[in-house]
Image 1: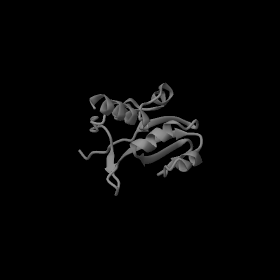
Image 2 (image 1 turned 90 degrees about the vertical axis):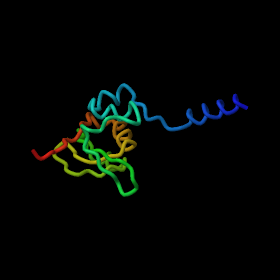
Image 3 (image 1 turned 180 degrees about the horizontal axis):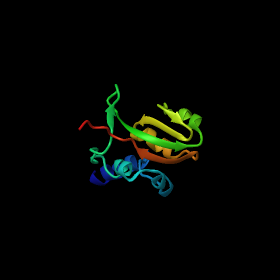
Image 4 (image 1 turned 135 degrees about the vertical axis):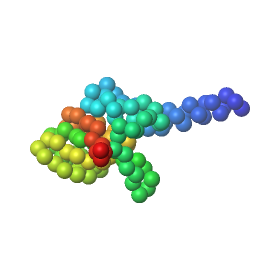
Length: 116
């Protein structure tokens, strides 16, 4: 019985979509944002985090890309676009999609503005 449970658990985990970064994806991603993929309980104090209506967290990012339309096709809505720089807010799963796009060169953490 215990062996069957463990086998089922391993199969279930192996079939779930991976949120691990490849080396190529990690080189495109700001170190602060990389921490999102290291654990479910990462420190978000350096991130501009919002909440969507469905309760999913979204993060402010700056994307350097040669193809804004590829971002739109991936389900990302650009905020501001200036040459190859795009600002937007993405969920963790959208961020993973963005990193897989060949037209994306870099994704940086959006700045968090605090009144002093």
